Image (cartoon, rainbow, N blue to C red):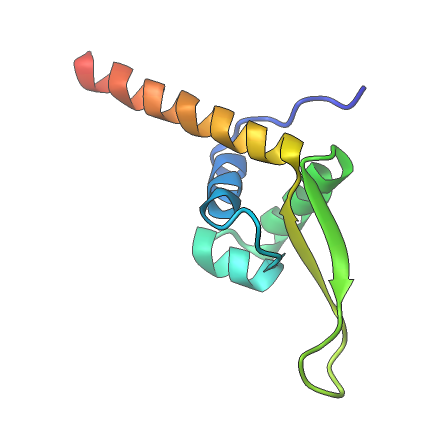
Length: 100
């Protein structure tokens, strides 16, 4: 059984970016720009979440001739549930911090 992904700030930011547009295939470059995550952090997270069944990935042909195909990613049903769970946990944490 694969382990549950950690709830690091980077993982939460990545899942939140996917949650905003959960049905759209996303490129790593696009996700990097949106989250501010650098490639050395982003791509291992994408691979780990994909291996754990939270993301699906595929190769997409280049839009212009001569360019290589690119990997694209989107949330699976399990990934969507995890993203919602982490979003609710973050909101609860924010509310608890505001009342303290």
